[in-house]
Amino acid sequence: MLFKLVFALLLVFCAEAQDTRQILLTLSSVGNSEKGAQGPPGRQGRRGPPGLKGSTGPIGGLGPKGQKGECTTNSAYVDNAIQEMENRFGRLKNQMETLFQTGVKQINGTAWFSAGNGYLYRTLPASNYQAAVRSCAAIGARLAVFAPRNTNITRMIRQQLSITSQYIWIGLNDIERENTWVWENGERLLSSDADWHPGEPSHRNGNVLEDCGMLFHSGKWNDSPCNSVYTPLCEMSVFDA
Image (spheres, rainbow, N blue to C red):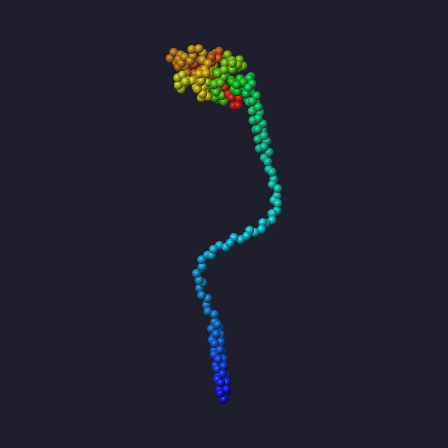
């Protein structure tokens, strides 16, 4: 009898448990039957640290060979450049030949005397000192400053250029400062180079100053008034010819 009662209670308990499980399953099914709306996105997080550098990839193969370039030459330009070089070489050759040789040379149709001291000489029509300076400069020369220091050279110049004038202007004066003689190339006269005629320079001819240098026929120097009219002796380097 007791056994039957316990068995009956178990049956009742199991039935109730089954009903309860059924209810929970039903509630669970009802809760998941409808999905709610998606909420707004959250704030963007901070940027993470950079990743590690990847390994170097393999070297690619060689590309296709390009086309051969064309060599374009301006033949006229090259010819002109070669001609100019030949002209310069010819001038240099003549200059070197003239440098230590003596004799009359024709330069641009004009006779110049090469004295063997690296300079060429010619005379111009007689004028005063200032005009002589300008005339020599106009032909790319200057009044002589090296020839007057050597009597043998001035003698050769007179003979070769057939100079008959008794007096010749040279590039020497003390115009800026009395008794301070300066060559036309800017050098001051050294006492060791001076070749004055005895008693010269006398500085004055009466009331007239004698500030410009000239050559006597003997090759000796004299000071003379700059407005005197004498033959200019022009001097030019062989490398300026």
